[in-house]
Image 1 (cartoon, rainbow, N blue to C red):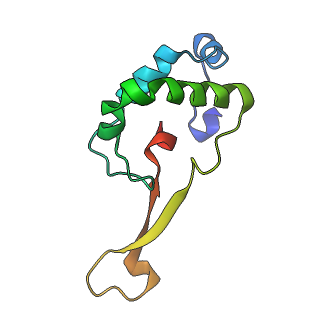
Image 2 (image 1 turned 60 degrees about the vertical axis):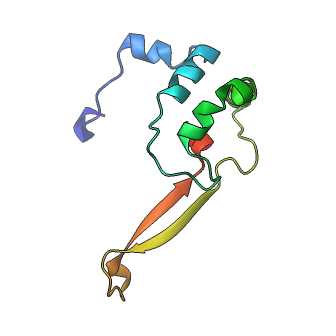
Image 3 (image 1 turned 90 degrees about the horizontal axis):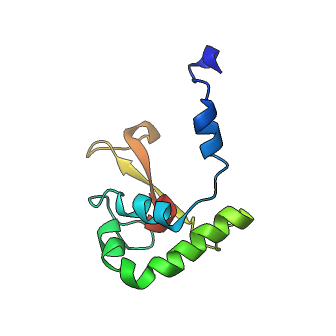
Length: 109
């Protein structure tokens, strides 16, 4: 790994990878997400989702904990839209475009 520039994990960090995820960690990560990002394919941005946390938090925690237990996400939660955005106004060739993707806000967490 060092040959390609990746550092070896410390013992402490490797142990943290096998610890169970807590609802406190989930909320901490959720609340630390950037509020200024554009909404995802689900139409919600993080500011909206953080605002309704008292209503959706318990269900969100259940969903995340279930993912870590079973390794499966609910159907559709990772839907992503990909589109090409022109780099300039007279874009004609494929090289004149750049791809962007819109991922649902919940999947970003």
